[in-house]
Length: 93
Image 1: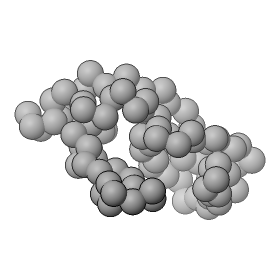
Image 2 (image 1 turned 45 degrees about the horizontal axis):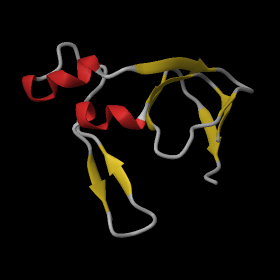
Image 3 (image 1 turned 90 degrees about the horizontal axis):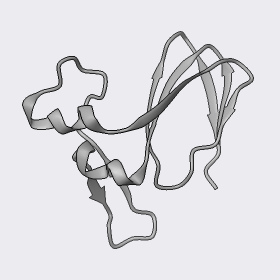
């Protein structure tokens, strides 16, 4: 749960099915707390040739304003960028 206290944030959410397009790697794969990272700079224009498939990855986007909350389900890739000076609080279930 991502709670926006002050300022604004741009959010993109990518489904698990988009993992190959995001060139993701899994860290601690033998651990129940495994997580992944992606080297793709999703807002780069143009994307480097090595990450060109990321341009075809489907996503939804939103802007969080003060007082907004967003539930990010487990295994959903997310990209977050502050649009202004901001304060957020998150809680992982």
